Image 1: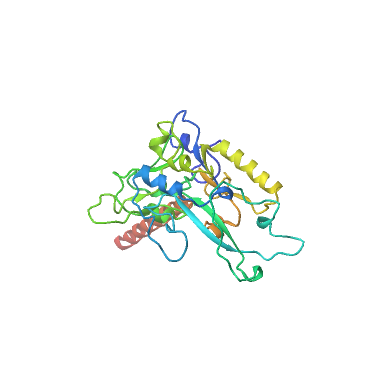
Image 2: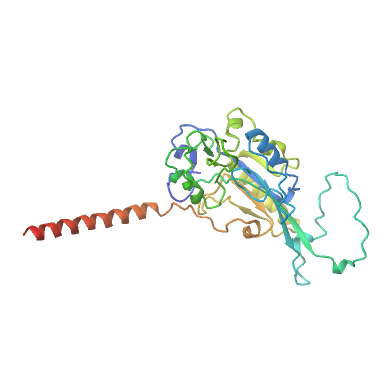
Length: 317
């Protein structure tokens, strides 16, 4: 990660923010192929960061009872029910390949109740589990638009919100290309209501040499915390291993420093297209055109002043 570019391309965000000799950039690698949907990360995040509980608000639309990332949900495990794929006879469904059976994690089970429905009449679908979180972008639009300095870049390259400085303007909410950051809702009298909230990568734990709470709680190590450059190498090796096993749909999301946000500090191994997970396929930092807009606005303002001055001179003459 070299160079300095306020709009595009790779850079190391901590030195770009003015830190001298910062520690290596920290982040998450989330391997959805080993996520079991236990939601331990959600609970750990809420307990450590004192995020309001909403785990038991049954939605009636999914087995997922926390629904999405928001100000009261900094980690969200999505339950994605994907219909089975119809493939050509010579191209079997890679995810259903018997050569790659599910991993036995030793959990107790009970038998399904007897059913008279033949196997061919049963629904064909697959579960995709994914623990989503703030991406901690290299080029973070939320930082660009925050008028109070509530959002800041930490020495670890992460993006953190300071509750006591945020005025609840909501500019960051509109600027985020992933729809992550949100303003908290809740009962009247709660001082955090209306304040922008999101994952801080457990900044207080990082400064004390600890792992983020969600990574520490994950029983399958689906959430891996560490130096971003090392995590990217680990992620590439994991994808290569899955491809060798026949899981050809495995791909990485957010690890490319040349993408529209300069790569992210939290990136993912997915087993389908990003859209299936509700992720934008080609995210772009939403403030990339601001310099051109300011330049054009300045030119337009200058032209108006010149026109007004010429009109005044003609009237005087």
